[in-house]
Image (cartoon, rainbow, N blue to C red):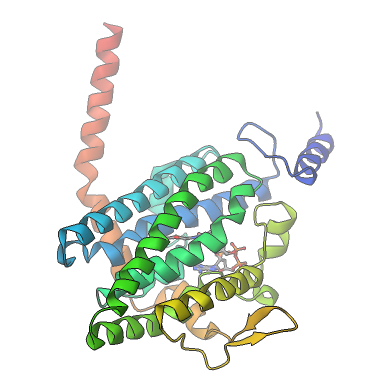
Length: 312
Ligand code: BYC
């Protein structure tokens, strides 16, 4: 088939809302966009282990430690499914890791904020995994097959993560005044960064139009942010916490909440490398990669030897 017919066939697959699979022809721009988004998503899962991971050794009970360990392990697993999905497009996990630690690929802005108190473990589950669910459930229908299929399992696990966060906060809210204040302080710090996870406003989002036309994204950034606000306000009322936005108000006509604008200058600073923890997150990831070099070498030596033995 010539390029014109290949493009027509690709567009008709997209038009029928069917999947593009690794061996199908695809425009180079489509391949690059999927690699960019999936790599950024994988990196977010891997870097995202750091803020909560710091609390594993300080969890207040064996039960809380077991829950947190399981959650952080799930995040490592999500990163691995997503790196595998990316590899189907001809880029290796080793190359992706290099691009992350050299700052050539991004990861979610949210993980450049510190987890300062134990309440942050709950808030990250409730708000950060809550935002992840709003963003990722529609991605189960993304046009690139391996990405959409990995999202199905990831979303199931994210639901568990969100509920464990809510349950942790609900427990603290039934505790002492000091615990309630700790939860409120944590929600005050995380609310706006959680809304920034959905990306810039639609009129300032260079990639949305093309990604929607290709079915990579199924909703715009602002649509998903609104969904998050509408889902979270009633949950905040059940918890008994106040969301730190004076403009938050039910709009009868729109049947949705009106809300204020995040500080987009702060967002731009964070995604350009100048958030509170960017340097520390990348330095930690780089150190872990270097410390793991002997494991990769040993695994390769073992694979080579097994291969030789099977040919003897
Ligand atoms: N942070 O044109 P736009 C998790 C970048 S992990 C950093 O709207 P797009 C979890 C964007 O990349 C959840 N950068 O872009 C893990 C672009 O720059 P480049 C992670 C951001 O791609 C552990 C530029 O800004 N989820 O749940 O159409 C523990 C312009 O933006 C951000 C995903 O990765 C940001 N927040 O839309 C707990 C979801 N926003 O690349 C939880 C999958 C924007 O051109 N990704 N940028 O240099 C997506 O849905 C989309 O990529 C986004 C951005 C909505 C994030």
